[in-house]
Every structure is written in structure tokens, then in C-alpha cells.
Image (cartoon, rainbow, N blue to C red):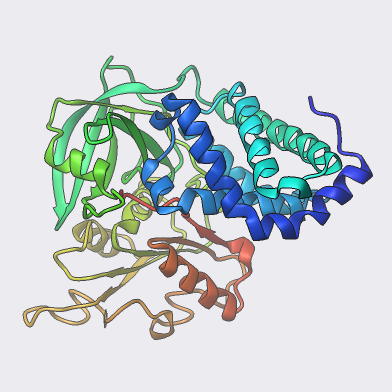
Length: 407
């Protein structure tokens, strides 16, 4: 257990926050470059696409800056810690990894800051890292303790591949050992990893579970992403083009802080707002809630490029037809002449929440309504900003920020 920070150390860490904001990405990029170079087996853990694009160094820099800013009020970081702890658990990060990460991160800080990294600053940040590592180690242990004996990566067979829409395929995954599966909370995800021949090592990706929990298989629905210079889409292309029914992949226990518990808040309205393949966790939430016999109001708002790109449209139509508490509105960027407004879609163009009924579809006047948002980051940011603008408290807005079902 790390010793609590002294007032002097807290003051030093907070005073260096602006410096970390200025040089944060340089520090975290150097950290990743060095640790991956010296410990090459970590290439099997890190998403190298996010490394190449700079997304992961930027994300870590933002997290370090937030920690420095709120080091004396860590309650402000609860949601960030929860997000990262679940992501770490999905990748099977263990307590013994933290000293190694600390060594390379603090070395990167010293290297980038140079003479500005005084002994006082180095000591304060060493102590601060130890406190932060303890927070993650303890929270991740709590998560692992709920896994009921499932440790690390397990082998699963692809039982079925089901085309769902243009470029989107569902994979039904069953344990290779034939054992029954633990349940999960609708909206959660798994990590899946496969060997990537182009890179010569394993690569993990996170995919939302796209159906209500059952005991014999998990379902994920994966969009085939375009291959580009910085290598996005490697895993999704392999799954679509190379992996067949009967082939084996590895996955970790379902996890994630983005979920709806069908057994709780039975009368609270939920609004599910998604774009593209971001609908996958929403289908899990929808199917689980109606299967539980819940009468809570559910409004599903979805945007897609076209009807051909819409996934699970029949599932949604069936739920609306059978359950009076379920309603749906669809935005299509492009429509066909044979499609009927009000039947095949409701609005044209990109999703614009100003166009939907603010009470019947968004429950704006209901202070208990909960909002779940999934899709591209810019889409989620726009939706969040709109909801805040019309008076929804941030504590009622839940974003699936890892990026759903894509690469």
C-alpha cells in the first residue's frame, strides 16, 4: 500500500499540471515507444493502431493531466478510473504490470522535462504514481473477483457467422471447452484477440455484446473497417475475410461500465441514442429489457447512412410492434425512392435531436430519464452537448467511449 501524499507533494504535483498539459503527449509517446521497444511482448497487449494514430498517447496524456489537476480531490476522477479499470480488466492487466509502467512513465517525464524535472518533482511524481497504481490495482481486483474463476484469455470457437447489414457481421462465440457462460450486464463488451500476420503478433480489440445474455454463446457484431496507411481495420478484416465457422479466437470475461441493469430502475425511462454500428450495445439493452418483462419506457434513436447499412432493423421493428413501451425514430443520410417516410425511416440527413419530439422521444421533462449514447466520438460529443443544452444533467448521460464494434 502506497503512503499518502504529503501536502508538499500534492502542491508539487498540482503545480506541474500545466507543464504536463504542454508536454503530455511527448511524454506519453516516448513512454510507449520505449516500453514497447524494451518489452516487445507488450505488442500483444497494446492496440498498435491506436499507437500509430497517436490516440493512445493522447488519451494517456489527458488522464495524467486530469490526475495532476485533481490529485487532492480524487473523487472527481471516479468515472475516469472506472472506465480505465474496466478496460484494463478486459486486457487482463495485472498488479505486477504497474511497477514496470511506472518505471518507464517516470523515465519519460524526466527525459522530456530535462533539467526542469528537479529531484523534488521526481519524488512527488514517484509517490503520486504509487498512489494511482494502488487505486487501479484495488479496483481491478474487485472486478476480477466477480469473474467467478474465469482468469485471463479463454479460447472460443466461432459457432456462426451471420451477415447483418452491409459490411457488418455477427459472430456467435462458444467456449471451446463447452462450459456454460457467465452472464453480463447489457451494454458491456468483451476483448477479443487474434494473431495478425501483417504484424507478427496478437492484437486485442473490444466489441460490445449485441444480444441479451444467455448461457451458451456470446454474440458480437463487427463492422468491417477500411484498411488505411496507419492500419485500422486489421482485426475486423481478418474476422470478416479469414476467420470461418469453427475457427478459434480468444476472449476475456465481459466487462464495462456502460450498461443498463434490467432488474433495477424499472420505471425510469431510458433513451438509447446511436449511430452506425454503435447500435450493438443498444440491442443488448433493448432485448434484455423487454425479455425481463419490463414496462419502462424505451426510446431508441438511431442514425445510419442507408437502409442497407442499418443493422438489426427487424429486431427494432418487432420490439416496437410487440411492446407499447418501446418506440423508435430512425435518421437515414440517404434514402431510396421505394422507401416510405414513417415506415422505413423518420428523418433524412444526419441525426439532429432537435427534430424529434422533445418529450415523447427524449423525455426532456423527466428528471429521472437516463441517456445512453454510442457511436463515433464526434457524434457522441454532439449528442452530449445537445442534451446538456436542453437541461439534462451530465450524471444521466452515459457514453460508450471505447468505440463500438469497429476496428
